[in-house]
Image (cartoon, rainbow, N blue to C red; front, side):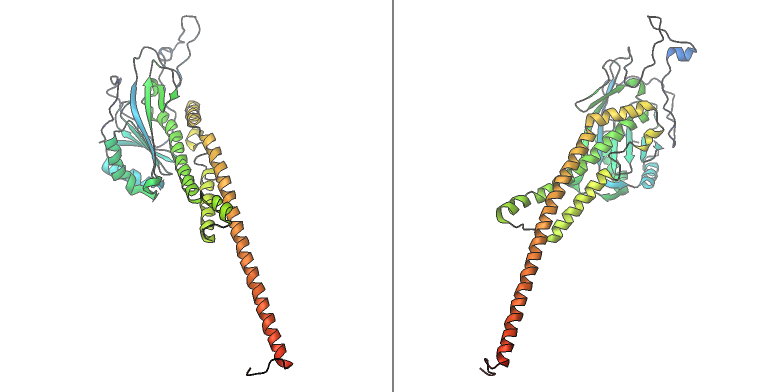
Length: 350
């Protein structure tokens, strides 16, 4: 079984006899009941009005300091084999409990412990770890993730983002400096972590597209300067066509496949507060702004490559025109010589 990452301020386990529920379907998240709900009445505060039930963005009072842990999100491949992941998890880590969703496989130790750790395997090649030690992350990469990669990324293309999660009852809920603070009431609800993980996975995948675009920019950086200074570029038409194809593929992956822009299908049937949480994390990560900037850079790069291609096409047509001109000149010279021979200006053998 996986060891747990070191936690700070670990509270005692409130339900040592409880076990995690295995579910392959979504279902509503189990929310804690207020004292009024447990007693069947209405809980009135000091002002005589019903006290509102705590929400995911509220902190409960009197619980003491929260716990902290590390979050690691990494994109390692174009995709992951879901069936193979489930089989390897069952074979190599039988004590892990798994839950399956539309495009995610979730695994966690079978402990009713809010700090037991969670792993989310996304079909599009991203993995998010919550509260897992660095050693266990490496072990999972070797035993589960690497064998399940579909079209693995090169080492320099792998994107890794690190965050910190914090369950608190004394601090207001917020996301700042890569620290995600949530209500401790929902510490054992893996769907809350899944809502956050969707945003983190989308951000990490977007980071891969940003790095790929930067690689293309580095290759084409000198083309406009060479064209302006020398009037020609040292790149073949085939290379230009390949670069245009790469830009189109990356732009299509961001805008047409929908992994980065669309709201995941998980939220279609999930409670509304989870979608609000996902939206708030996306706003912090500036996904919409980054996609807009990425599309702008794609557009500029595509215009530049098309300009280079048009210039090369014009050069090619100019060469063809000169070849035709010289062929016509040669044909005229040969014709003149033949006419001169016929009228006797040129005698055979001279």
